[in-house]
Length: 353
Image 1: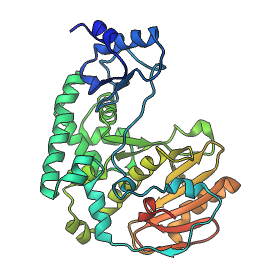
Image 2 (image 1 turned 60 degrees about the vertical axis):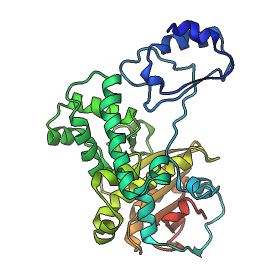
Image 3 (image 1 turned 90 degrees about the vertical axis):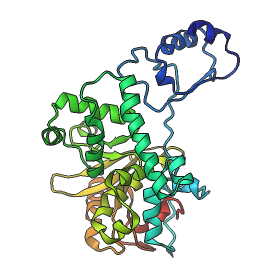
Image 4 (image 1 turned 180 degrees about the horizontal axis):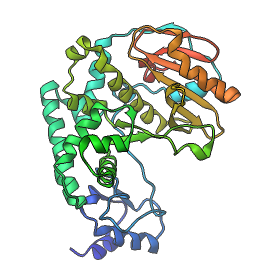
């Protein structure tokens, strides 16, 4: 096939699916865009972040708009249109109310994940088989085709290990020692997993802009359903073993918040907060004007004052820049817990207040 001739003859919108499979098209597309800057001529789709994979030396940076499609949110699955992010940054206080809550239903939603095929069409056993095939395809076929790396067989093991540590600080040196991988190799593997949209990192927040990248990020699997599959978790097991729920719930919440940020009116960036004294806030949402909303995730069905310590510390640090702090928990009441502090059930993420 003559790629240049094919693109020259294309009329109207031309769609290239799984574009990472045909890297030779990139320089041709680059020339085509440079010669004709009309927007909307090409739609490129793919299951990997094509701009960071090593073999794709020709970059379309500055010539394309990059849109990351997350999995389906709970709001989409339930046909809800509200966006909690806009509500949290708004001036009106949350509405005090009772929300119907079924813990088993939340666990089921978490384990279903957001991949359309897995969460909408497949029952439990078939869903597990789908996840196995999905991971095998990505970590064997796609990685082999997109990046010439040695020791590719360790990638599934690395992904399982990261599932256990999802929602934890990323300590590269410790992870390198534990897995017996050279640090540079580990960094490359982690980059590949993120490029394949299997993992995501959340950077640390600091009131000093220059120090934000100094501390460790937190690493998450992108999809709670995939994480649950890799952990071998089922609803009945989670009900019997509550200690397994914490990291899975936080991973689920981070995924839902990322999806809400993708279409909220409020433009905000996502961070985490941790002080040397051990005060933590799982998620910090910062608006462009510096206004901050903090979100803490708790797997318990009831809360105490100590559950708000991280948010209180963040409030003291920011002063007027702290707009609101919320602890998302597995209870059923929306209630205040002090100035600018609220407790809210996890389902407000799709049935927002």
